Amino acid sequence: MKTFKLLSLLFCLSVFSFNQSNAQVDVTVNPLTLLFGGFNGSADFVLSENLSIEAQIGLAFGKSDIGLNDDESKYFGLPVTVFGKYYFSPDDGADKFYADAFLKFVTRSYTIEGDNTFNYADYSNTRFGLGFGVGYKIVSDGGFVFDIGFGAGKAFVDKTKFDADGEEVGSIDLPNLMLTGKLAVGYRFGGK
Image 1 (tube, one colour):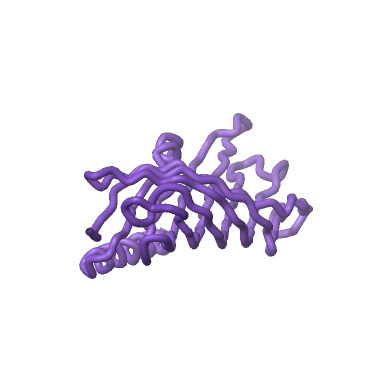
Image 2 (tube, rainbow, N blue to C red):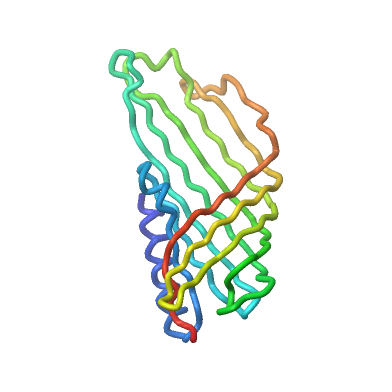
């Protein structure tokens, strides 16, 4: 949790300092992840009329009773993605239809805790990949932003394992396909 607080602080400081330089930055959140108890936010730094770099971070965690004895499952996920975007015919700078390239890192874990844990194995997954996508961004005159996009790529690092009592009990070969999706709303700071 300390890492997340530090990342949040650094994110806020970079957005503030970037805004003070009279540049444009679009700060957005995905409202769907908020409905399900997670968080997915991003900052899209506008470099020119046609180019921007976006940093996106997500956080998902939770607990649930799995219905056997007092066992409880815990989930944690942290995806971090960096996009390079090219806008084909922007009206207000870094808006309308775009194509992007992305680097994505994801780590997930799912653990079972309780008296009956010998029947279960903990799950962990770490992936890193590269891909391409398309999207469309709308920026209103008042600075409100709506961004939707989709992308697909290949995972070059994929470590998935099941662990029971400190011993690896299995692994899964997942497809090398990595997907990104975006449905975000936010606000444009700075600029014109």
